[in-house]
Length: 114
Ligand SMILES: [Zn+2]
Ligand SMILES: [Zn+2]
Image 1 (cartoon, rainbow, N blue to C red):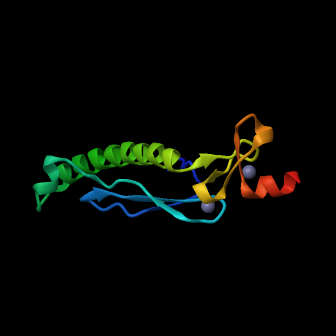
Image 2: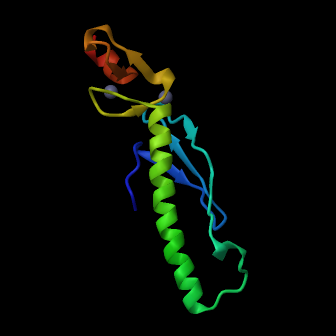
């Protein structure tokens, strides 16, 4: 399995579409990323014999991987990376620190700094 930018994520993907949800490392708020369709001629075929099914599974696995990679990038725009502990946190858990040269950190790190 590929690595997620957050510690926790859910994979709601089906054979029709790729759907992922990422969770803020701090408050666990869910961040949904755009759903991507599994675009393949195989999708329309209802009855697949062994070999074709195998081929579909290979294409699906590759598409799933790239959809997950895209979703991670989308999640990175929604979340901020704490410059101290490296956690990916949502806007509410982000502290824009003055002593970090305009950098960002998470609530937890901000509290332990004091
Ligand atoms: Zn949060
Ligand atoms: Zn932190």
